Amino acid sequence: MKLQRNRTIAFTIIFAMAIILFIDPFNFFNQKRPPRLDFDQQQLDLVRAVVLEEAKPAIESVIDALKTNKVTMIGETGLIRDEVNFFIKVISQIPNDAPSSIGLDTLLVSDNEELSMLIDNPVWDESVARSLFFNNSPVWGYQEYINIAKAVWEKRQSGADLRLLGLSYSADFSLIKTNEDFRNPTIIRTVWPLGLPDSFMASEIQSHLDQEPERRVLVFCQKPYLFAYLFNLGFEAEMSRLGFTELRHCAQILKERYGDASVHLVHFNSPWPFKSSDFGLSYFADGLFEKVVESLELGDTNPWPLAIDLGSKRLDSITLSLHDFDPGKKTKLSQLGDSVVILGSVRKFTTVAAIDNFITTSNISELAKRIPGLSNPNEATPADLNNSIRSASADFQQVLSEFR
Image (tube, rainbow, N blue to C red; front, side):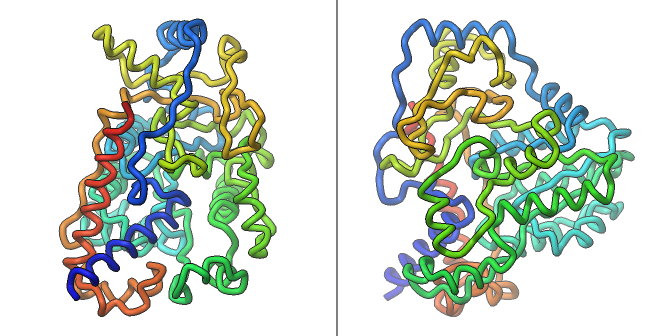
């Protein structure tokens, strides 16, 4: 009985995380390696030359983008420590006299007043920070994300004109009892009464800038929010069937509002959502940059982190086959975003550290609303759920090792 209960809890945690990411990044149901296309040597030599000749120090590149754009968005895969730690380093380098706001999809808009109090408090309060991340998702109990808030607090204490913004709203999953409920338009629109997360995030960013147009917004969020020029036809058809009318991704909405020159999109060269593969993830840009990274590291070159301009004219001839988006059509690198940050080989990445006792007896009663399928929190113990959060990170570490 206990074994069956633990399996149910583990599946529930996985299910909840899949909802957060809109993909199944943990590959619990398939263990095939991620697909990677072959490129001819001429293309690889070209990209290698661009990396060596045009790349900029990555942190400097992001800071420059923040200074010159209304919105800079950095898209993470999720659960990768290297990505989160890079973002923390970026925060530490933001000029104190540059009015900036750090926006996270792992925090709630409804908690923004508490977030302001957190970073303005002269004493760092770790327990409050954890509770605010819990409010958005009780399965996202990882220390590195708390460290983002602490980095904003540290910068704020040094005199920086910096704010911390939640960009999500709390969906009510208590109505989700079965898989079929996810295809019920009435239920799903009740779960997300304010629309899909992308349109909500875009609205909040625009509202923030309307009130304080002199500020710049730096967003750290899941990769799909950055899909300004990529259109997943299957996703759009399903969301339309469910009754949602605003189907554009956040970056597309913002670029159409402010213009291409005022919204900068940064991807990591890290696992990329690819639902039509058995693996559920693939390489960024079909593995083009990863192939070059591997060749450079074999030659004892390790210049990372570096940023590459995806709009470089030298890269204009390269096309990709991203079959999740407009199948059969070729995609240019510039359609993925404005720049890519290379942190090194994907297989060398490490995953985030689970927080001990993130779920406790005092907050477990909140789980029914925030985890689909867990209508009765009494069927799980805090220890069960905390172990599942820890296992998710460990299992994803195994997934990363397959990127070779």
